[in-house]
Amino acid sequence: MRRWLLSTISIGTVALLILLLLPFSPIGWGVPYHSTCQEGSVVQRSELLTPWLILASPYLNNATGFATPLDNSQIRNAPPPGNESNGGVLGQFSLNNWTQVSVTTVWVAGPGTNLPCTSLFIAQLDPTPIPILVGGSESDFISLHLLGAGNSTDRYLPVQVSYQGFRSVVFGVPFVDNYGYFGNCGDPTVQYEERLNTTNPLVAVPFVGPTGGINITAALPISTHYRYEYGGGAGTWFRMLGPFGAFTFEWQRC
Image (cartoon, rainbow, N blue to C red):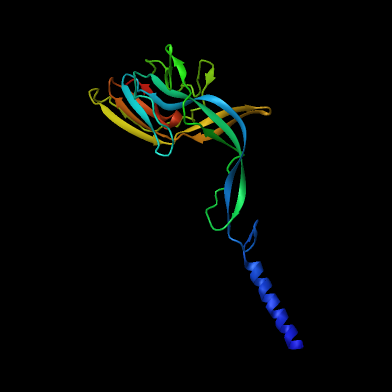
């Protein structure tokens, strides 16, 4: 009887130790699990101008660019290539529906990568443009001059615009100075060409609710392609990493 009791105690002790050594999860002791971000209810919707291209041209020189939808974006068309010159800045936009959706981190049984929510809400883009009146006819896209020609610095570039009563998402990021430069003060005949490609540029989507406003960061399902020219006039062109992940510039005379 004593031997049977001791064996029972030993087996129970070992089982308890094994149980304590197993990881605990919200699912239960020792159950593999991972976190994921689950969508909840729709909070609100808003029609907002959405940028495709923010094209800044170096002062006294030219720039060209275009945007293309990513393969998984469900976007069926894109605006035509853009051109800008002599310090001007061009923005290409479409009018889209954006939806604010609540999200919650949940635990799921089974192995997997932990992907918890990083905020309380997400912003979802409807990829189908809403036709907007441009020059007397409806169009899926509109081009706006954010800065006119003749500007030697892009530091005052707006990061949000409006058109026909529709405001845009916030497409600006803090300027990053000292992002390289090109100068031809020693030889004004020297010219240079540079290309830049970006993917999933970030924007902040503004929503206004009963408790105030909120900006939700979202990545656009597009890639952008830029070509910049330097050297059409003696000076130094300082690059800044500006809105939409594209280059902006500041020119200084020799």
